[in-house]
Length: 258
Image (tube, rainbow, N blue to C red):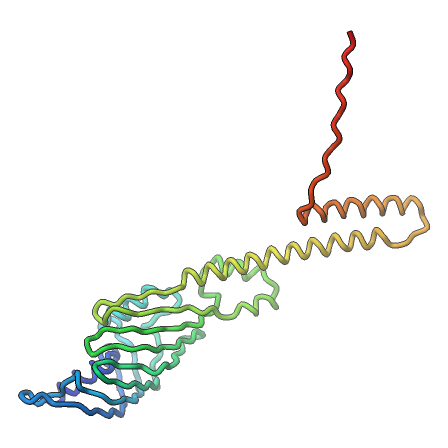
């Protein structure tokens, strides 16, 4: 019984996820290190080795983890309780009380996640999570702007990279993301795209007016009308492009009679 308890305690130090999942963990672990002379238990600080594991029929129990709860509260576009961990494979190495995780990928619906980083046997951690999030999950303002794009332009707005960092420790985690900045950048780019589209549309319309007005004709009356249209369109175009307005002549004041 003591040996089984020690093995489980060691596994939770090496792979803390073992304490927040319901299911099975199939793993191969290689360990070398020292034993405590009195208790005949592993000296965790002396351990080194590697672990390759695969999760089977697994679900997350977020009520057992403040880390999952903290991460879930920062990411509105994902429900970590519904994260599918079945057949997830991961590899890690550990030495001098520190565990390094080889980056691995997860999939949540149409969101992909890449996870890598490290943690210590003392439960300190430093993890990086990189999400590729479809723009449709980033709020009403973004969706309204995308709806104004042409289908071709809308297809170009595919996924937005969102970065998250987990530091602190497993009992008191600190989670930060660049979700707000990424959303702001996307909105700025979409607004600029709309403005550029409107300006280009206005230029094309005015160029058509000018081209039509300058077509050769034998009718002197039509020529005068087209010339007026050309002048008017050119003035509008200059105004649109920031040209200076022509100053109106000053009106002469009537002479006073004595």
